[in-house]
Length: 251
Image 1 (cartoon, rainbow, N blue to C red):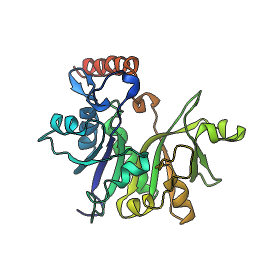
Image 2: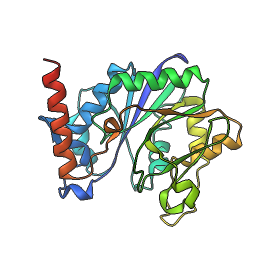
Image 3: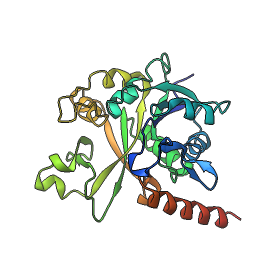
Image 4: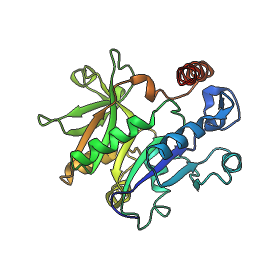
């Protein structure tokens, strides 16, 4: 693999408590296919040559559903946050010199074209880390993206920890990243868990990058609807309607 290649690391370990089902969240169906299938399709269409999924809740069921589909699985057990999830994939990406897209297994509406634009923007800026963001009229409980005067991202602050000035920021973190692999796992290894949840948050790599003088930028996705995560049966039904309309529009 050369430095121009792209791989995907898909976070798919969640139980999805609000789905009110024991089925792993990423196996809930939309138009007869599991959520995770839409994410893997988008990654492949965007040119990802290597696909790794981090599984956790009922991992065997996810493995079974995607057997023979070209996915490499690593397990996160126990589940100690997004940074911890990414760290589990260090062995799977050992020696990989390319770019890694970190994707969420419960975001089925993301288009391949948007992922391609993310990678192009990342490379055009010669960035070490690019975080995909969206701008919302009401950013609510989402993590705010804080930038410096040059437009570089300096940190992502959770809404509950944000100052009133930071809460006024309307640009939010989608949880989707583009990171140079040789840098990624070294940075993740430095994440601590000094927080109320005692979890390791992937957002911390932003501040780690800033301290190390690494270029960290944002890519603003044009359509906030594309990055909608599926957490409830109502959101699942909405995503199904949207994908159904897309399919009809494509003929």
